[in-house]
Length: 325
Ligand code: HEC
Ligand SMILES: [Cu+2]
Picture 1 (cartoon, rainbow, N blue to C red):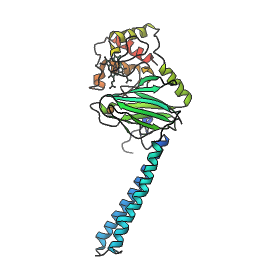
Picture 2 (cartoon, rainbow, N blue to C red; picture 1 turned 135 degrees about the vertical axis):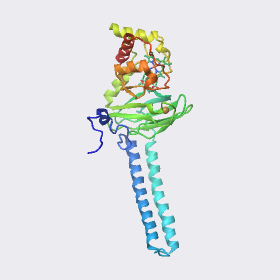
Picture 3 (cartoon, rainbow, N blue to C red; picture 1 turned 180 degrees about the vertical axis):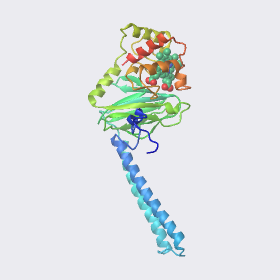
Picture 4 (cartoon, helix red, strand yellow; picture 1 turned 120 degrees about the vertical axis):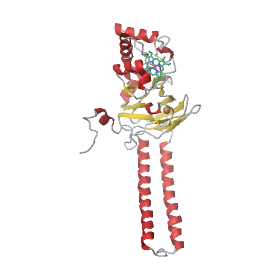
């Protein structure tokens, strides 16, 4: 059978299959882009084969003159044919470009994403135009246009969700917009597509496309402040967060003093699929591991490892963060 990754050897691999692929389009725009690419690939391959066949014929036949008179041959092969094919392609490309860049319209979901080395700051526009802050994960409703404006806080990044849309550059001091309409529910993955330093490869995020009611509920939950902890363990975790000064880099809405902007908003970090910008699954164990050794997990990132915390404190801290749903 040969070497093969199966669901038995790596269950994660199967569930991840196709979640970050231009060949599995899940929006109107990604469909159009794939169709255009297929036509270009097919036409290009056909022309390549044709030219190679002519070349082979010229070499093998050893005739001094082509079957057609030179001028006719050049007029057709060198002028008419490229002019016609390239014109068709241009019209096709312009039509697709117009189609995929059309404005998202009034009822669009509006999102603003800012790239940081090496994570994503996300702000949703709420029903009254207010900003709802989160990070490193997007939720989108099916069949409703989405407008995402992007910019950067430091270097140039590139925002790319292959299954949903093309790439768009995130440039400091400049705002770009991308619009698309997801057509299928599911979990997809986005990735920074412009080299942005040491941890560029670990700058990713998940996108959850879901039915409208679920999306509305999610957004409503994200707008809420963090819940007050009740059990002692969670209370101790919240206290450790305050004592360690985590709030100087991280915001947790509802927790006095936790208004930092250097790291991701943690108000609902427990609801996210991943931590470390798409790098680890979101779980209480991974949260503890991240806090204790973020510099081993993602060397050079802007959060120091808190490797001197005692086990009890670390467990409490991780449990509290996990409870922030
Ligand atoms: C000096 C600033 C700084 C301090 C202090 C800090 N962090 Fe962070 N933290 C960051 C940055 C920056 C990131 C994003 C790292 C990345 O993914 O590149 C981060 C990421 C995280 C994440 C992952 C969030 C996500 O959505 O991926 C968690 C959880 C977290 N920090 C918890 C803590 C806790 C708990 C403390 C205190 C013990 C703390 N941080 C202290 C800067 C800081
Ligand atoms: Cu980047």
